[in-house]
Length: 240
Length: 262
Image (cartoon, rainbow over all chains, first blue to last red; front, side, top):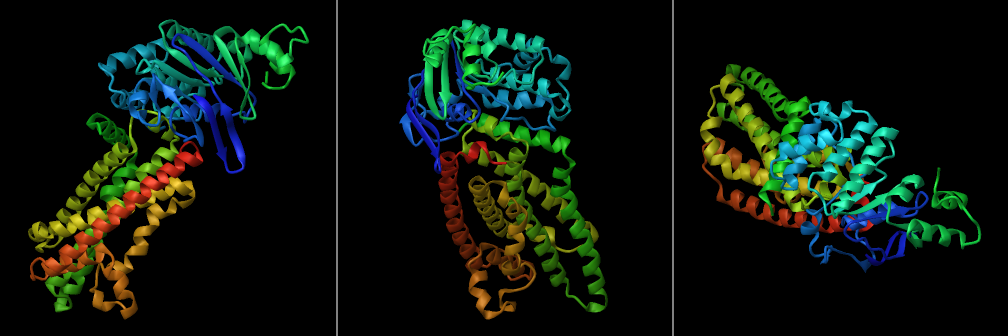
């Protein structure tokens, strides 16, 4: 995306933001609440129309080829839920049909096993814990083996063991050639997982580069810190 | 437009119906209960020739067809509201599903539900009273089509308003049919309305559908005037509804309402 700007009334949600993500790369998008992270993800999906700027995904214009592009992307977000009365299997079957998945039952079974929730296959979403719902959402996001995967705080409600497993799955996707856009408040995981980081502040790109480069940019190279996480915590741009 | 994605919308609502008894009661229980009550009431009125047989047909026919219109219009908008209530909108529209495919899926789902409801109601009416409603059904089909298409136009327009004004206007899904009912002349002819309201009534396709239905049930055959007037008006309203829906959908994307509809 290039020179993207989006205003909601007088509020500038995103201002002149340019970013790119390459195949086989995890791009971390970090910043304080209200920095514009979710808005950027929603613009990438065509759910919000930008006021200005251009978006090209897989070499195609999002404006003109949205359906073709969306069939190769997917998202897991805490702002996107699944119908609560339907079971895990039913929800995933519906999305498997929407994305045109071959052998959906086999695919769903494999994903449930990967996320360690096979036993919940016939449970209604409303009966699951928040951590289990996050894992079902991740199954939905991985159904079509997306070439571009958008993950909005995917480990926010997970215990350490499951969060580690999710990180390994995401890294596995990256290693198999997928591009991943990953937002998180957990700076430790951003450091360990992301190849590059974009730091948003008040809707603008405040810094971009490798985690170390972003650290130097945040502190202007004036002070030594143990990690990029510490740097961003120190300037109050992320929470612990 | 992909049939597979439309089928996914059908599957989603089939599963919802399996788990949610409200969907079944809305489709079958209330229309059938209405008819049972009216069968008893008209049976009472017919005792001692207080009500002519054709009038009974007209009352029951009006009741059944209005139920079809009301449930089709309401369920189209409520089907969309169900996605908002379950916060499923982002997942739906982040998939390759287009808004046209989604609406077509909803229309098919609700057409099936409304048809089942209508046939159950007609079946009960026939069991309760040996009238000629079922025999007159083929002649009434064009008027039923007018009601279904106009209900579709109203449902699309209301869904568009929900896109624009979010759930603040969700009451329209349930209430707008009630607003149209007095002017639609469901149980009485247009001539029964005060003069100043007649032009308004004649501007509604529903009025022509019910006038046409009454003529059929009275043995007067199919009124071409009401048939073509109803179809023409339905076409105009349908075009306006689709145009306004496209406008508000794009406005919802510009304003960010699509991701914050609740």
